[in-house]
Image 1: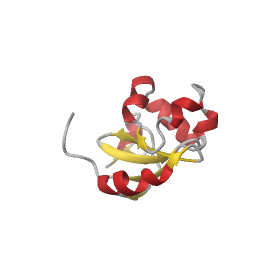
Image 2: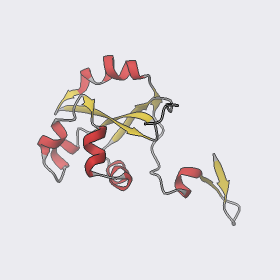
Image 3: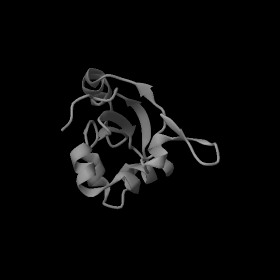
Image 4: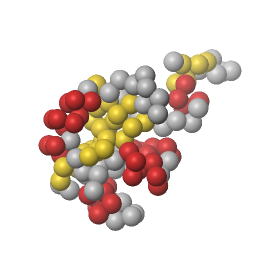
Length: 119
């Protein structure tokens, strides 16, 4: 959904709420993520992970972070081919995710439709 500013410019609702502007990726299912995508990218040379954002599972290629992460490569290597949501959100916030996207360290591969379930 978009909202008009007082200048008549349309802005995405997420931008107004301070949420990261995530690149539009391809759609995928949770089954595809678990069975196809993550197992094929579970090494430091091809490192994909899932981060849950706003009830959507988003697959990111974080291969560049293996060498660029301030906390060291081991932290990122543990996320390769797995759901890294808990580890990520325990230490980082939305600003960090957006910074990684902006810096090219995290590239969205695909995302599921938003889940109706609340945690």
